[in-house]
Length: 132
Image (cartoon, rainbow, N blue to C red):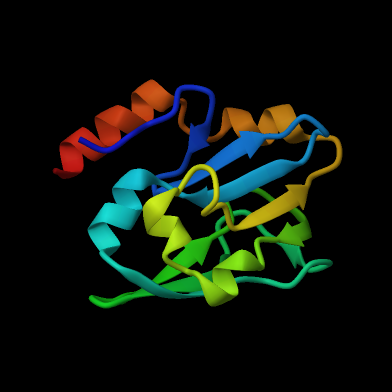
């Protein structure tokens, strides 16, 4: 069974969003997604300073099985990129919610509205249950 953290928000595309202590949003892929992909060998992410649009492709994740697109769960400006993934992309497999996070985004004013459009943990659990 895939781990779903209660304090996060999720997308239909299997990304997670966490509100950090400083008000930014940390984004990565879910435990379910990394299991589906298999061993991750490469992660391509946007650069810091880039504006991303909710629903738009913002990068790719390559595994030994396939290449998958990464989509923006929110609109905002990329503040930080997890540079450790350049040399150790397997962190996404080992620790998708902690060490394997991908980007941090600053949204501005509409954070609550944006998070309200995402799935809470119980709805995401139902989604992955339906997909299995």
